[in-house]
Amino acid sequence: MMRSFFRGAAFAAIIFFGAKLFAQSPFQFPTANHALYTPGDELKFFAPTTPDRPWMSGSFGCVRDNSQRMHEGLDILHLQTDRHGEPTDPVMATADGTVMYFSKRPGLSNYGNYIVIRHIVEGLEIYSVYAHLSAVRPDLKIGQPVRAGEVIATMGRTSSAEAIGKWRAHVHFELNVLVNDNFAAWFKKNSAERNDHGEWNGQNLNGLDPRPILLGEKPGEKKFGLLNFIRSQTELCRVFVRDTNFPYLKRYAALVLQNPVAEKEGVVGYEVALNYNGVAFALMPRAASEIKGSGKIQLLSVNETEERANPCRHFVVKRGSHWQLTDAGLRELELLTY
Image (cartoon, rainbow, N blue to C red; front, side):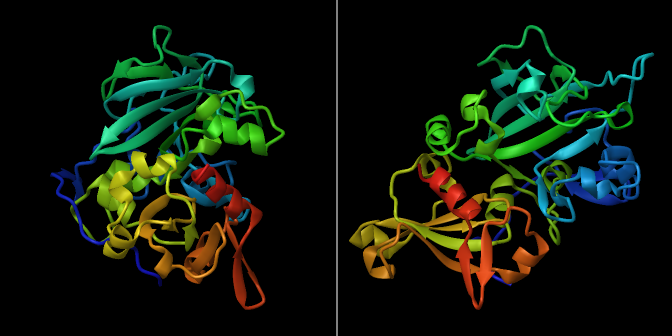
């Protein structure tokens, strides 16, 4: 297995639930449904895609279409309904933050009605998404600060895609990094589709698994820190991008490593480690003397074990004995560096 660029852990307080220790997470559950804390109660927390599907189909990862389609959030089940069977659960901000965007036109997105909130945690910008809402709080405004636990919406089952049945009414909840400030311009140049949401299109938000973040745990460790969690992502592949000035470098400066050679000789590009969902979790500046070839984007290595376990974004493919980036992989990197 390939190693991450980063190791180590950050301090966090420890709290007790049942018979298990959890480190205090910087994020709260976005609804009153906390069944995730109880092993064996997953079907009380997650909304599976159909009654005969396992709860994992409502979790994060390569859990759809026989592991071939990505689901970038948690589908958190409702706890309460009105007399018509419609969900009435309040949806709450997961942490202190600022409202960046909301859409009250459910036909314009698979998210239906949704809200995006920006949070700063350990110096990192993280964006939470709350989707399929029946209603956004009427007085909510773009740029408005919100507090952790503050009600921002009501759970629902809105979507422009397939109908969401009453039995599985849920909030689709994501925690993301923002890929590029220039998404709208990049999308207009590279897609024939319409973009109704500017920079807040879901394609510009790469999800992290909210489950371990909400639980405040990392396998094998009792301490939790968001920065350490991101730095410790499992690497799918490593690439070199011949570019030195793209927004991600500034926004996620904490993920940029030091390299004395590049500092001395000058930076010509970055070696980037991606997880299976395309999150760039480590970026190493490189000098010309450290790079072979002249291509703008070069695939350097692939973690075959991780690719077999989580293939759903289809970023790389093996042709004979050689790995190469797919069109999807190239598209992701071109967006990152646009």
